Length: 237
Image (tube, rainbow, N blue to C red; front, side, top):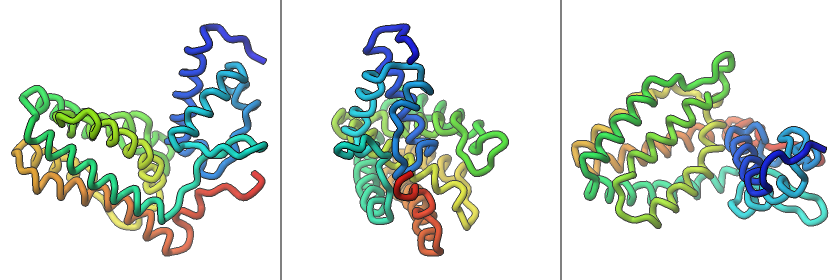
């Protein structure tokens, strides 16, 4: 068993951040059983740090605790995707409207800078066209956060962050399943331009379409046969 080189709290936070990143990137796939001893070795942290990190992720809905059996990555489904997307559209729309109403020049500058970085970052992982690059995922999250940063309701922003994280697994899974061309750069640019023009109705409509298209890609693939089902681990794995 590896030794803890720092405080327990730091180790738990490190384990939490790495495990959360693995879940969001689907390196730990929906439905997959989490093997705690393997994680201790992989992360070089103690059993207690891993267990605390897993419990925190379960509380946030990324993992499911099974009595006497440990943890599994939370499953995904078409039903949850539809519900999650509908709620995200409502909450993100509220945040964006309030950001457009209350946002100042500093908000505009932050949004333009975040969009510029996103537009210059390759979407796919180098050498693997079926996987979203980590740099793009970071830039994408920063852009969407900047888009609503002018919102004057901390509680709405907290809810948006929770929903965005839950939607991230679905977004990444949609990348290799797209059966129609998609111009992400245009989508992001048009949302930004509408927000900067203080055209709340257009900006909110474009943002809703942006999120709904991601859901549609997965739901179409599900209807064709593989889709969401191929992401689930087999029982007993």
